[in-house]
Length: 200
Image 1 (tube, rainbow, N blue to C red):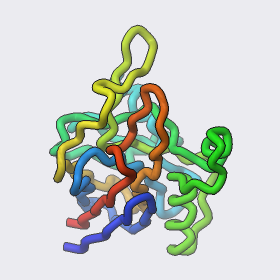
Image 2: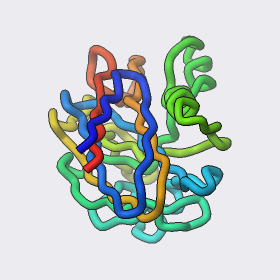
Image 3: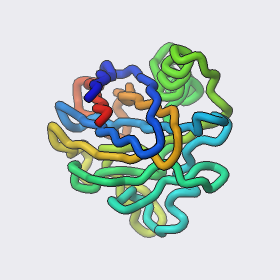
Image 4: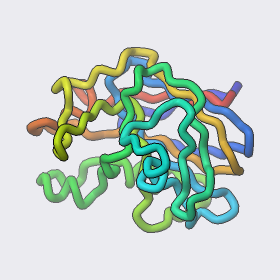
């Protein structure tokens, strides 16, 4: 088993062959992990949360779901959930523009983490990739999205197990979001913590 540590607020990318399984873990809990995936043969075809939730009619990833690409190819199966269903298809990954709007232009972001991680493998990221947000506690009520409760609740050691349906390049960002704002407690107070990926 190979273990990849994703440092707090940073990202890592890795290859997974068809049929390969991997575990994403939040060791300390309360830390969102943005998960990206790309077809190894054509990285322009990447994971699409929007395409993925349409067949299931669920805005929260669940065991048994298959995550689809922009071209509706089956990319990843959600095999095991050790984090009590605290996952999200809705929130776009944070990026430099968002932090500029918040007045912190030099803040790290999930898209920046993705670009750095993919560059280490020799890839350029296609435009506007989206992520599945593991360990992210969101609810939707009457058309409005809320954090419930106000603090993240993913337990220490929470995890998910995924299986590749094709040869993939995957990336995980330990979301660096640490700003105070109404209804947006994405990560634990005190700043981001590490994420661990185990290639099984």
